[in-house]
Length: 112
Image 1: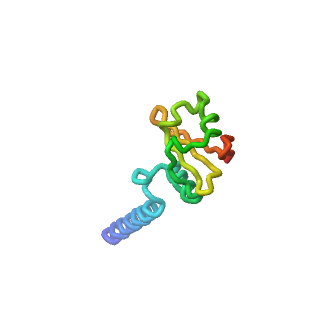
Image 2: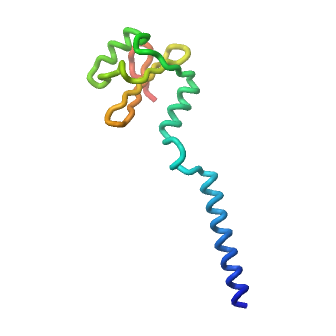
Image 3: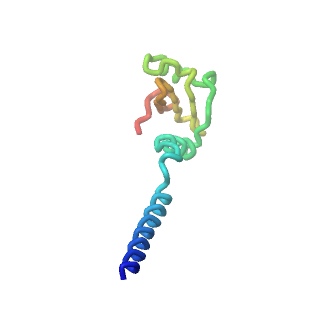
């Protein structure tokens, strides 16, 4: 009888681990996925058809707005524009952290 209890005990533990592993796999392993904010930004750019823009093609209104201390080094950052040209995104990397700013074509900050 003790053998039967042992077998049932091990089967129940195995089933628990199998259920846990399946649940963890469905949720995804955060160590192998991109950070949430990166996926969010990629999705944002896809939904708004954001395309990369060279610094030389940035409108003068934006250049003036970006000359503030806060945006220092903007020309070396990554710049994206929506397909309709109404929204711009500036990504600045400082101290291994990326800060994202969004603007309209006139240089006003877009509130999210």
